[in-house]
Length: 515
Image 1 (cartoon, rainbow, N blue to C red):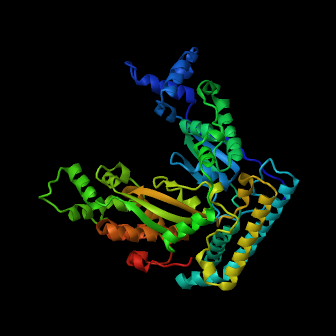
Image 2: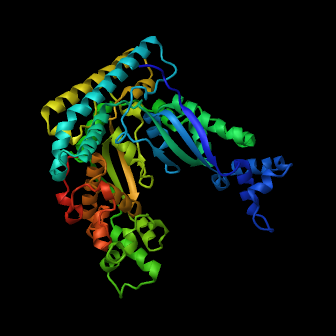
Image 3: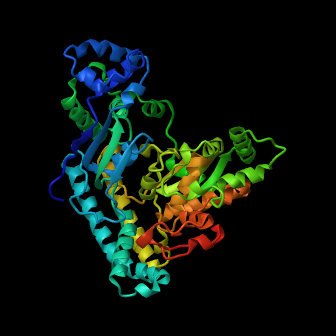
């Protein structure tokens, strides 16, 4: 497959040296002379005398002082396996990553572990080559049916350059399901210094500890060049054997992943997402919280009146703002007392986007525990519309799994062979959210432009909430409907990316799409 590109890490921006930030912010807490600035520390020739102070507050767990320094990294040639499993598995980051939905993948954008022997290298080459060819072939094979479905929405665009561009992108978005988790990406990734310290401490954890350790060490080395003093209080990485996941796997006998998957899917009963837990008095609790914020007696207004005033965009105009400012509103923070937990099933491709909703956390699976020799994948809707295409897709999945099983027979570690698994790999997990975060997510993902699996999972979730909390559920809607209720123009905020469907006129039961 040509040259194997190695991960590349650059530190693009940092506001100041971590040690100076930590020390100055800590000293400010006890300063009677006002703010202590980072420059007061960095320009102090005897600043090393503050090392014991920093070590002391670190050991005591007073880590807020370590969050003031923010680091903007440029990461290249890192696998999507690593990004999903580690970089984007927590809420304390910001990333802008190249999109597989809109940018075509090239044959040299594939990750190879360093420790492959000759036979294992051959399996990687053959599998990757097959997946790239399947990807390119599917892009062409999908184009006719994508165009047919596209023109059902945009009849006037037939033969236009816009139609050609959009059909190409949508075909590419679906074809990517055959691409491997070893497909690489490049991204901007911004974190606090504290988060980098956490990365460093846990870089040996599942699912891909070798790649994690390599990249995180490179990130830490970039910061050490800037500020060698941090060595004085930096904890060394935990060994993989000391992580709770490893110890659990040693303590409990591994069960049959296929059996668990069948049980999980039976519970879902064909849905993308299912509500499995919630605060039974959610609407009453929300109303009580609103009363508490404004000191309103039960004698004045009903629960329904208060909830509808807060959640209805026609009365609460900030709901139609493009910028999400809800968390900064005292009234809107009442929504944080209402919670929901969903049982979900998405492809790796879809979940790599779903997890970007950092305020709706999930307990995502340990891949080594849940992947079996049986092909286990998600099939996009378009393949269901053409049996020949579906057969082609099914054959691709079976072939990819045959490479995976061949790698296993060679004795290749799960970590290494996991890179061969396709984007279509099924992930099963539980995801929870408070109402404030869920409402924002619904606005983003009930849009017809949203990734299809996340869209349909969001439809399932909105319907489930409506069943048990109808006063709340009626206001879970896409941005166009929110703006329509608020009489904000334009109704669709997407401009030239308008989906072509007046979704704001539809009820949830009418939501239907194939592209």
